[in-house]
Picture 1 (spheres, rainbow, N blue to C red):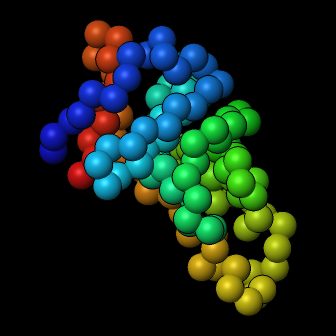
Picture 2 (cartoon, rainbow, N blue to C red; picture 1 turned 180 degrees about the vertical axis):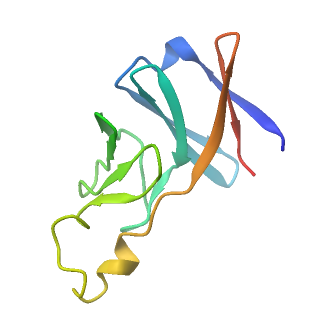
Length: 114
């Protein structure tokens, strides 16, 4: 798999995120307590970009409607944890974010976008 350099570690301090547009792909990097995570940069709820997303512990909070995703797995946390599972159309709105493999080498953040 081909890795692509996206940033320097110091560009994304712990507890912060950074959004990238890479051709037709969008990616958000999240630094949770020094561990880097890479996820698709579009929220599945309304297909809005996750630019400006806030990190709350391990949850990435969409700046548009506050849907939350676990940076470790991409799984939706909110509203899945609040709404009943049989609510019409809920399941299509709480699809997980795609996650990407991340490697940090010599202070550079590399992501496998395949």
